[in-house]
Amino acid sequence: MDAGAPSDSAARRGRRARRWGRWCERLTAWLLWARGWDLVAANLKVGRYELDLLLTRGDELRLLEVKARRPGAWTGADSALGPEQRLRLQLALRAWLDRVPWPGAVTFQRASWSGLRVRFHKPERWDALNLDAHG
Image (cartoon, rainbow, N blue to C red; front, side):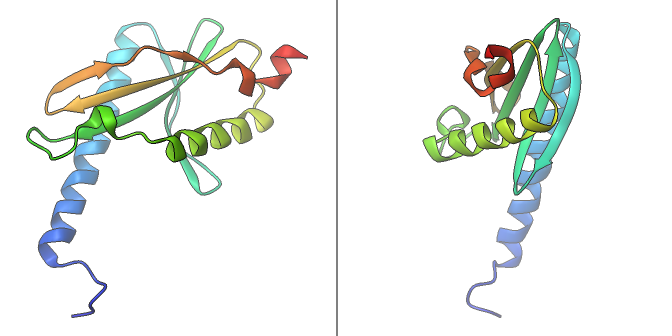
């Protein structure tokens, strides 16, 4: 076996984690749809980055980053978004807004899953990324 290659059990855990994350993203999209949000895109590739969920309600565009951990995980989903990833999300959203201008408010929100419990963090205004709206 290659020293850098993951073991079969590590590969299986990775596949399970990705499946769990995708399931949580779909459930998050459904929960927000039930609250009046419309899904614009899911798992949108922008360059080498990915935006989990883009949603609209009225004149607001919201980027939602979904973090999911199984119960008992060593690290919680609440602490899974570091400054580097936040910057990558901002760069990807800015690139998307360059192609698809949005005239309204732009916000960012995280949803953290721990098992079947979800926590929606307080939305943040990211209007500065939407330069067209400010002239």
